Image (cartoon, rainbow, N blue to C red; front, side, top):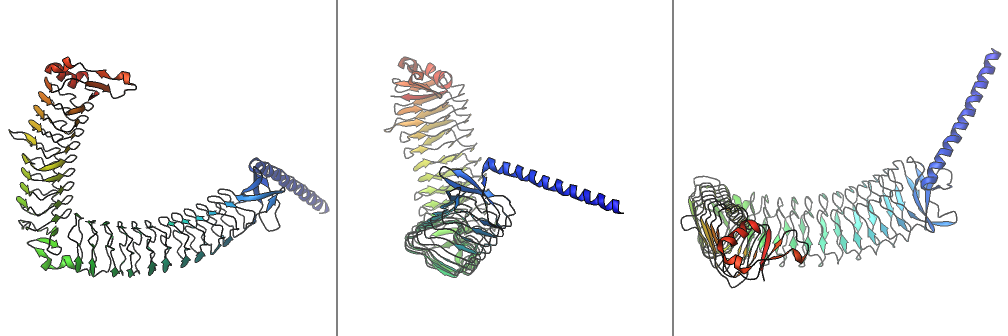
Length: 640
């Protein structure tokens, strides 16, 4: 028995010696690892050691010896040199850290320095630090107390975001900027005072601060940024200064307890969904100076009436949609844009007295046409006196075959008659100034269009593949893709671009595969890129001489494989790259002025790459045609 005890004692003694040696070995390895990135500092009992890195004539704290640190005390000096900075990400993801002592010697705290220190309870930042850096205390879930010195001038992006336990914070005088999402998802933040020094508050700065009840914005702030108070569920009081000019996108969206707000006269812009979902908002003023109100700006609010001032010229889509109690809306007489579904889901739209023959009107003299019933039995007629047709007013609806738009109408909104498949003929009066983007796009049964004035917007008649007869006398401009893929377009007379048109947009008549001839008046100054591209039946193009210089864009008549002749007047000074490429039947090109032409390749490096074209060559109609379609097709042509 005695021998066995002696053996056990020797064995335990040997194990103890091995353990000591193993600990010494690990310590040496750890010290070696630390010395490669920084130096270990001495620390008091109960605190985790910091790692210090020499930077010029001072030290910077770059980490702790353990991610499991609970308490950290940063030394004021190390090796007789001051410790002046906490480096970027120094204590990031120290998930158990609760207490930190920062000496007065520290003048800067880096990005993400304490990010994801989930159990950090409080922090005092020493005087001398000028900025709370980006993500400095991001996701410090248990942080309840923050003391900021008067030296602070800026709070960075996401600086205190997701500090769920933070209930209040004092922003010192001297702070001029608060970064994007600085207090995002600070769910418990109920009180914050912004000093008069603040000039800018970034987007989402107080997004989802669900306990915040009131706030006063300092005079000097010009923009209530996008999503600034988004889903601040308990916000009931907001004071805005006269310096504010913009209410940003979703700035107060879904502030469900906000019942009223006064917008200062300085406000010029109310952006998309600015107050959307403020379900108790029953009182708001629109200042005279606002130019346009964005999409769904006041959708799903508790408004009963609203007055839009004379300064407003545009109302976005669904501005007052689902304001169920809204029955009265006063609109100015000068609106040039009304978006789709302006009043859908409102008491006004639900009142049958506001509908005339299946059409919803609004305005002092019912001058604005908003919507039509989807009932296919209506043969819609637009009443004289109508000034504007709202966006998507007739989209896809009605059995009307012929529509006459009276001279009183000045604007046809975007997609106003989009995909009205039964529509065969449209006549647009001489009061029109603008036909909106895609206004008649995909009206597949439309065969005839008469347009007496105004600008034709992008894609306005795109893919109206039954459209054969087009009269655009009086039109001032033809937008991008306006008549693209109108594959039936063009009778025996072809198309005449009248002398009122200034510009023909890119792809304007692209793939009008039955178009046989085009006469372009001298008023036109620009024929856009691919304007008549792939008009395979086109045989002749006449461009009349103009007062102004005319430019023909890249690929303008490319792939017009039936094109046989073209007349180019003296006023044409530029012919774009590949403008007549693959016009394989082009044999006759007449230049009114054959002198002064030069060709430059697309990849030209120096002036030496430019080729001068002899006048004698261009006088020869056949040779000139070959130059355009083949020899110098991949060149830019210019006449000087």
